[in-house]
Length: 409
Image (cartoon, rainbow, N blue to C red; front, side, top):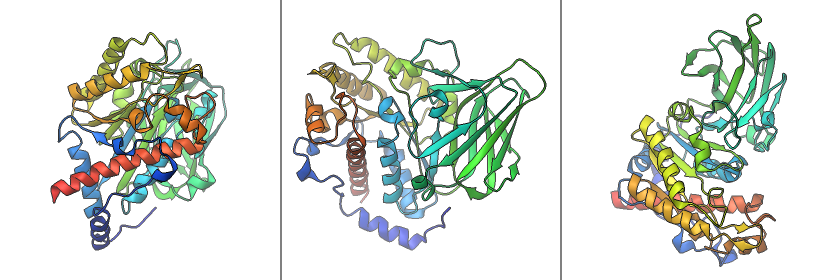
């Protein structure tokens, strides 16, 4: 946990940082990246206004917690790009570390887990993903795990790198089970059992007297009832001011995949988002006969579902990057997906980060690969590539915020 930074220091750093836009990415190394196009586009001047005001308040007064939620596919599930954004934003704003945020135990679903944390567990668990044709209820994460065992344990711990940066004094678990079927206990690292403080809308919350970096959740079924417990994810938080960057992604997900997640709006509300970032479209457009009309319809519905529950939330869409079809030719359907996303932004008062154009446009993935940043499939990136993508996103967001400050002056 951290102490509050004195107001005068925050104001001084605020003034210095607002004087110039930092160049986070070395332009000389990547001549194919269109840095002049690396901007946040807004169809109206006030599209991200309340988000920028909250950032300004955090900088000036240091008394605001800002929640950002990014939803996406495999590019997000790996949490390399998003972790880069999380740490960059928290470092850029004085006293800006508001906690780690929402996580899902992907290991329990036998898929790749972010490197910053791990989950060990006991019991038999079955998984369900929004990319599968299964009859199951899903939430914000787009993936769930369920058990009907009488007893199970979930042990969560941060990696060595993350533990030096994050701890938490508030833990929230998103779940579903028949009333009073399972008893939930939280055991913290010193073997102290903490009583749950709040059950509401499919979530349980524990508030701790001191910060922890690991904990264990114990599930025990009452009696021999034939019922199951479903886990939708958890959030590791603090009560401090700062930025909390939540990331949820599912490998292979399309926009329609998240429309299957009936509990998504309800669980999203409980993260109190100031900004929702939607990074989908790569899998929707991964075909020559891309149906742009269906893509528009599904995407508009997803935006509607979010705004229906959180009317004032600000939304930023990102265009999918360039990729190759079967590693042979650039996927021209991404151009059509980009057009749809800009149209959706205009229709729904959303901002856009045009990553497709910024990275270099059609055929750019091959250049990224030659520069040692692209994966062999010419769809994904290696660790270095995702870090650069995160830096580009950070640079665009900081520039937009800096422009807001200039207009305020």
